[in-house]
Length: 291
Image: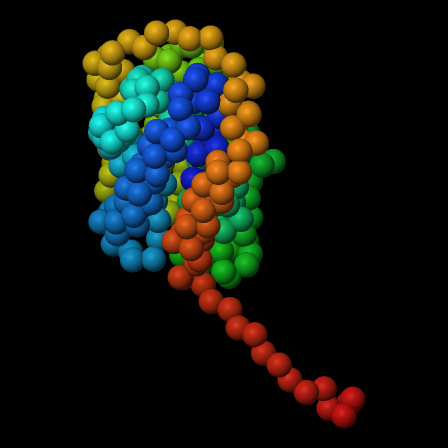
């Protein structure tokens, strides 16, 4: 799941660069959000699922959304010499970037077998007919669907792949809306779409989500929609600017930006990329026939 946060800082910087926002306050906003969201991915999973060795992107995204307005306020206070960041464009860039990040991150879920779907035989005949050509089957005992879900060799709903496609589509449309200067539409459109799908997709998942009829992650998604709507209407309406994607792309010719992203990704890999639920061993032996 650690792949989920990787793409969105780059897209977030690109969109803000295209909108003319300064690099330093934008990068600092990313750092603050990550500083809260990454630990929250583990803390919230521990509270909801009672497990010490797992992460939740749903909890991390909810925590990041909650602190985003405060992060923008703090950055504007810490860097008074820069042009202040407008909240609505920042929220729009974050919502679009999050959709891309989680969409691509679900490819890691497919690989590891986490966030796995329900067995196809539990669905209606129509649903089975529609999904059977795309069903996922895990057989490796190190895949979570096998060692936790006991679903080795069983065709299951490809919920991770569906999420990846839908979120990538949301990010693409959201990027177009952002570059057109439609901040509120880009923000609410990407966030409402992704969170509504999170609520619906939970009904297709078989992994443990807290043992309640309505999972805490579904509740967080619904609360996130309400919170985002309130923020979007309370935020000062930012002036529509002519975004130039070339300005955003030009940022990636700066060594400082590349080093910042590499450092961020390295930190995430060290924190989230090393599995603590699987192990490996390396052995050596003598080939007696060649002695």
